[in-house]
Amino acid sequence: MDERRSTRYYFSGLIVIVVVLMIQNFLLVRKNDALLNRLEAAKTSLSEQSMLSKGDTVYAFQALGLDGKGTLFDPRKGKGKTLLFMFSARCPFCARNVEQWNWIVEQTAGMEVSITGLCIDSLDRTGEFVSRHGVAFATFSILNDSVLIRRLKFDIVPQTLLIDSTGRVVLAWGGLLSEKRSKEVVAAL
Image: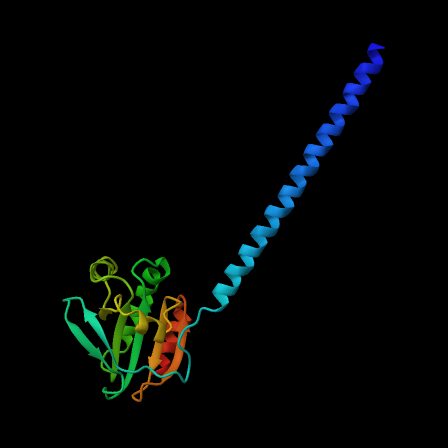
């Protein structure tokens, strides 16, 4: 009789364990579905990010210099081409790009090219970034102009844009510049 009772307890225990495992499996499947949906939404969001590309036009806009004064930026008023380096002071890839951007500045000395950096952070953060990383080009902040940030498609940083004297983007490079890409930038000038 005791053996029968212990067998009954054994099978009852197994049934409870199987039911618990089935419930856990069901909950894990639901959690997995929720995570997959979030991942898919994130992929969609990333694919919607954009940057200026060849043929887009950059119109005149106001930017704040590191001295806090407003400056009109208009690539159509210069004689030659404009290189525009777009970055965020909080972006580690942007910090790593400064070396290549500074190299481009050195290589283009004496050419008719205007080189400007645009940062989407506050003047303080922009100034700290310029000091800490030894930025060798004029840099401005456009933090307070969300319309301009959208118009310039500032979703991806860093960006390197070559703009002609009519304001049209001739070439655009998104992300880190390799040595090869930096040479491409200089060659395009």
